[in-house]
Length: 418
Ligand code: UD1
Image 1 (cartoon, rainbow, N blue to C red):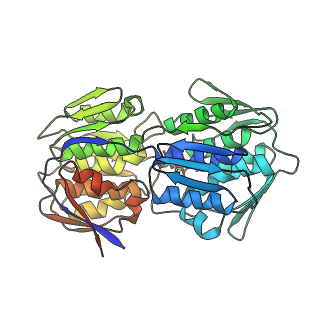
Image 2: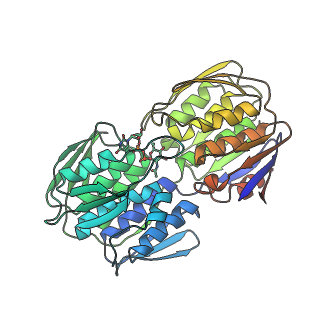
Image 3: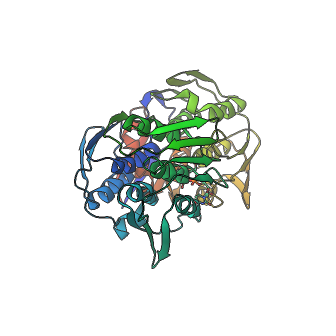
């Protein structure tokens, strides 16, 4: 086990580049299962979640090779139709092999993903949607077992909420199903759109009709591609907040500003000095910022994945902030840790009230999930004294060598063995 030691209070200065989006990389890796041959995915970060997904694909018979930020996935010799229990349990996104394996082979067996530290995370919408496409699905002994003996057939599917993962699984399945599938109330997140662009490059026929409806006309075959994934908007948001909270001057490079409209609008409401161009955000030094009201919502609303980080920023705002989490009801593991640092935070169900204070005090705190973990790094960077963040394997699931990259901005953050 490893921990981060952070000596806080240093204003960050300089330029930092965001990695490719983990949440795009994972569905695209699953998407390679739809073809026979070798695809190359570019801009893939080195993360433990990506390694776990690569191992899942390897167990299915794929060959996965990495050279720098390029992942080559060869699906010529897929031989197994079952995801290994230990790996799939570790990685929720392994559920995304359901759609492509069913579409291509008509059979798949995947461990039922459990809850996690941000709450229960059901997959009913994935399963109901696949059933609409003709799959027969049984869940027993902790596994999802799915058959489509006569192949998948297009249908009209309505999601009762715009789940990112369900939209992705259904897009993957429908691309090789017979006939037309309509996915109503689909997610329109940048990662879903990246998957659509990737599938279209492979030869899929997909059309977006407005923001919420996706039409897929199934094709007989898809072909391997070379594809570069979008920048990670969540990491971008985290680094922007790192610049602000340390009262630094930081340029965040390689972003897509159009994917960050709501978080940037909210940060501007807090009165911070941000300069935005298409691919870059510049943070100018700001000593004080206003409190904020935020409600997390499906894209294009405020992302739940930046909620813990902006909560940390609100801890140092001048006044009372209100944050409502509507996506994951238990995404609050960071709160008890921020309290240990002196933050004045109260939680009533999914509403969090934060009374801004003038400083946080470094202490020993524990990460429990990726985003909650990065929120604690931000707190440590801004705090007086030394902060120890434990269980940082959660943070490594989503950010590549985060301490090395923050160190280049002047942060005093070190990785140590426990
Ligand atoms: C993805 C992201 C995650 C992000 C989330 C919301 C990946 C790998 N992860 O997760 O970082 O926080 O989107 O933007 O891309 N739900 C159901 N039934 C289902 C599916 C979802 O009730 O079958 C509920 C969930 O419990 C949650 C909400 O829908 O309350 C949104 O979940 P969803 O959009 O599916 O998130 P993920 O795809 O799991």
